[in-house]
Amino acid sequence: MKALLEVRNATRSFAGLVAVDSVSFTLAPGEILGLIGPNGAGKTTLISLISGTQAPSAGEILFQGESINHMPAFRRARLGIGRTFQIMRPFPGLSVLDNVAVGALFGRGGGQPKLAVAREHARECLEFVGLGKIIEKRADELGGPDRKRLELAKALAMQPQVLLCDEVMAGLNHAEIDEVIDVIRKVRDRGISILVTEHVIKAIKSLSDRLLVLHHGEKIAEGTPDAVLADPVVIEAYLGKKRA
Amino acid sequence: MKTWKIGLVLAALAVLAGVPWYGSDVLVQFGINALLLAVLAQGWNIIGGYTGYASFGNSVFYGLGGYGVAIAMVQWQLPFAVGMGFGVVLAVVFAVLLGIPVLRLKGHYFAIATLALSQVMTAIVSNVGIAGQNIGLVLPPLNNDPLFYELSLGLLTIATLTIWGMTRSRFGFGLIAIRENEEGAAVMGVNTTLYKVMAFALSGIFSALAGGIHAYWVTFLDPASAFDISLNVKMIIMAVFGGPGTVLGPIVGALTLSTISEFLSSEVTSIAGLFFGLVIVVAVVLMPRGLADMLRRMRKMGWGYFIENIRAHRL
Image 1 (cartoon, each protein chain N blue to C red):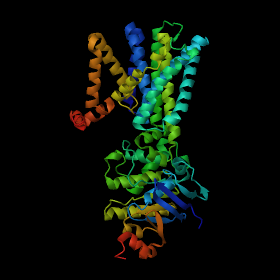
Image 2 (image 1 turned 135 degrees about the vertical axis):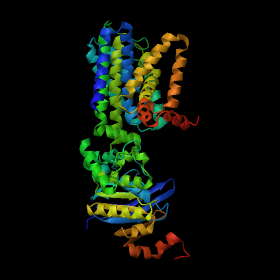
Image 3 (image 1 turned 90 degrees about the vertical axis):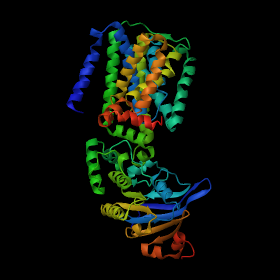
């Protein structure tokens, strides 16, 4: 299958610390790729390189076969790359509905210019993630789990082709994780490719088609979830040498 | 908006528009000043209130608008309307040329950089021959205060309608998204640089028009009064007092504070400034998010609203 998103030798260093070290991978249309690794492995940085909030020090990022290296973040969003933030970034003073409406007003292809239509679309996205009942609340009144859902709804309202989910499950309990997994699967059923980062292995194992493991910024493994999680190199990275 | 609200606004507009017919000359003159300040507060509201960039450079736009009118009328003998257009062009050029670098700065850094702009402009204009250097320009007098009053009211109405339209448009949502979280806005597809510069320019257009009316009204313009930084402080105080990022807040703030200030300076002449300062301090402590926020939340919380704000200040 032709890759929708391709990352070639992406590298990002911060004053000597190499956060992402020559990482390459591809994401196929409709695929769910799990990106795992211990804290500080470079998962969020890699997502920022793809979404354009940080520029790579070296390497190349291609979307539908074209380099998007020099494209500012808003253009990538209009191409169809949506992301959520691990540290949630709602627009605190806006209502939940209007937070999501921003995604519909802008987003892929430049978005929907009519506010009423955008709000209608936003309402659907909020129903989809299970926030349909609290659309009038202000975003900063939401608790943690609902904020995670709001992040998802905002990104979905952009009608992305690729969705980058940065730790959408962190801090949730088992029931909530199951709900989010369910939502992500439904998103994929709409034909959207998904890159999802997580450091809780169990949650991501059942969800992903493939797994990619980062450790100290380097890719140490890639493949099907079962094969990757049985890989001694991966076990060592997570649990230390003795247990391996 | 609810019907009674629209009715209330229209009634207020009618009362204001009628002032030259039933008010005294002094009231009309006070009105011109107050309305122009309200326009400036609305102009600041676009960049400061909605976009979240606290500009101290809006008095530059005001000065450029004044000089646009003065240069066109005095040096080129052109009509007032052409001068207003020239002032707007100057303001937009300034907003684009300086907005692009300066709007990359955030928070205090943006405020300080724009603060420097008005100082620099004073120095530059003092050395420009066509602008009358530091002596200034004397405009042809037009003794028609009711006209200036209605012009100012008309400008304020247009500015307010523009902002009202903005709040229900994609552009307005983009600006608010930038204010609330700039990086979050960018990854959702908002062209933040373009939107910020457009907001700066729009804010500049209204400030320049106010400056143009004022210059023709007082028939005199020099660099010190055109680029007066205290005017910029005033418009910020008025917008913030009324409610930044709301459609009507800055107008209410400007008219209320103008009235209080006028009343104090006629009643307690020598220490009026002190009282005015006190009003500001009390307002900041008791209602830091402006009158609009107070009216909205007082209904729910009652007097507890003020107590909560005092607590938030850790007083």
